[in-house]
Length: 133
Image (tube, rainbow, N blue to C red; front, side, top):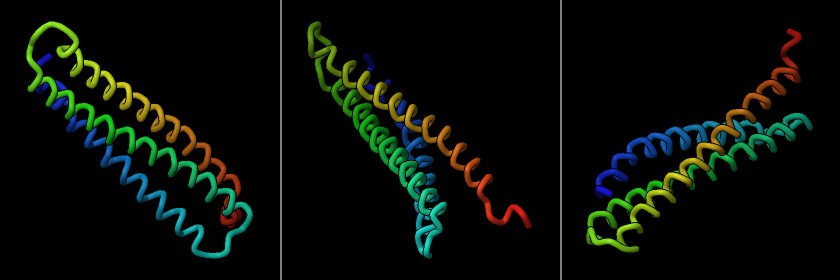
C-alpha cells in the first residue's frame, strides 16, 4: 500500500467533522434556548429528545476524529515500515481498514440522527401552540 492513500481521505473526514460540529453547535443552542426559561411538559420532552440527538452527534464526531487518526497512522506506518513480506506489511492496511469501519459507523449514526430529526420536527409541528393563529 502506498503511504499517501490514507492521507487522501483526510479532507473528506475533516469536512464531515466540521459539518457535524456545526450541527452540534446549532442543536446545543436550540437546547439552551428551550431550557433557559420554564419549560412546558412538551418542551421538556422535546429537550430530552434533542439531548439524545446531541449525544448521537457527539459520538459520530468522536468516531470521525478516531478514524482520521487511523488514516494518519496508516499513512505514517505505510511510509516507515519496510516493504517486506509478512505481518509488518499488513499493519498499515489493518489500521486503514479500522479507519474506514469507524467512518462507516459514524455515518450510520449520522443517518440515524437525520431520521430522528425528521420525526422530532414532525412532532414539533403537530404540537405547535402557534399553529392555530
